[in-house]
Length: 212
Image 1: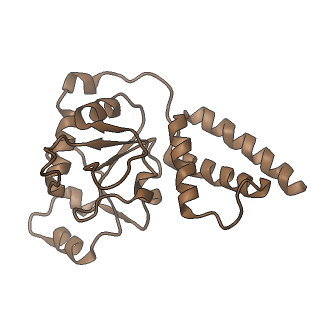
Image 2: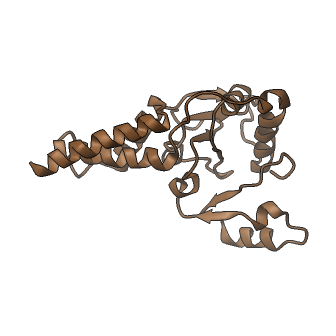
Image 3: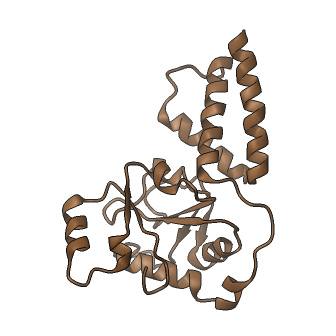
């Protein structure tokens, strides 16, 4: 991360022993010393208007758009607002719940016979691709400001509540239902202003439903 000028490291439930050793190692970088730890992915990406996952793409059915690294990196550079690049563990990668926080997924084009990569190498390859076109990266980005992750999550909660109250699904709805709602909202590609309007609409609907 430091090699490529990326300094905001956010970790979700890291393996504490290895994390402590890395932080206390002689010559530990400022990136590790300033790293922040969170309990959930939702907390880690709060404040980000774009969340992009990474995957080998061969372990599960992918419901999100899956782009080769060069395409995904270009799309990230074209977005306004703070962005998060999400990596899973070397052993299992990102879970379906982790991926539900993402707008799309990037894949490093490795050969089919050997898709697995060391986590550090994967991070380096992805960050290099993000910054290698300096001219494109320096261009001002125009267009709507995407809704931040915390706004998307509030929208999902309000929508889920409205669906429960209306009888669309009952209180036994699983976490999978919540994940599908989050993915649906991401596919809408809402701007910040549109998301605020939809929140206002849902609040009014919920008020009416609760009155009944």
